[in-house]
Image (cartoon, rainbow over all chains, first blue to last red; front, side, top):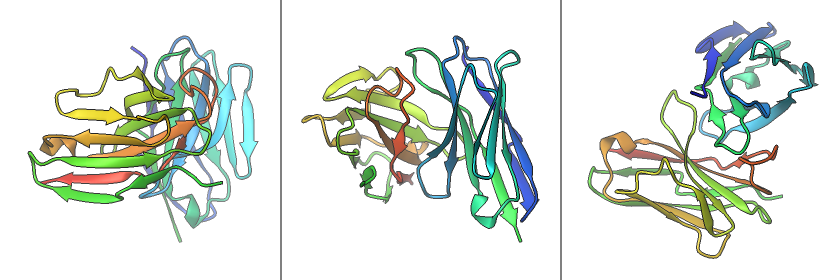
Length: 111
Length: 117
């Protein structure tokens, strides 16, 4: 069964600190993986997309990694800001089947 | 560029009542999706339209949920009669082409939060 597991479920960090969110998937065949950011009360917004041949991709203070062999991805946030408080959802695409969503990691950045 | 528009943002109804949600996708986006997001969960696909045709509605509870996209642009999602477990955020998303079938990014609206009492 195609599944996406994210950890931790929730995380609280101090402003300015770094953090790493994890995504493990069992989706096969693999097409691509996206990280979405969902602010409270808003719809998800794409942060980055990872394809099979990409190991690392950065978008400002966000850096995503992909290990296709172990079927793991991570999202690293550097120098966190209060505005980073949100849910981060890992989404994996497999061929032409419906996208597989993780449950998300709820990040709270506090002053 | 205008984003995906949804209304209403919030709706509170009693069980067994009916409710309808409206979505206007980004101009030019052929594919439209309705997702249900229960608190603490990831979005779950209810239905996918390509223009005005249904591509996937396998997870739509058809005994109570219905959706249409008559002119291939706006879409309406209806629930009748509502149950307590339908309390969730209903997200509409669109993509230029079949996002489920290519690398296309999904653009989400802000969602319609439904509370069933």
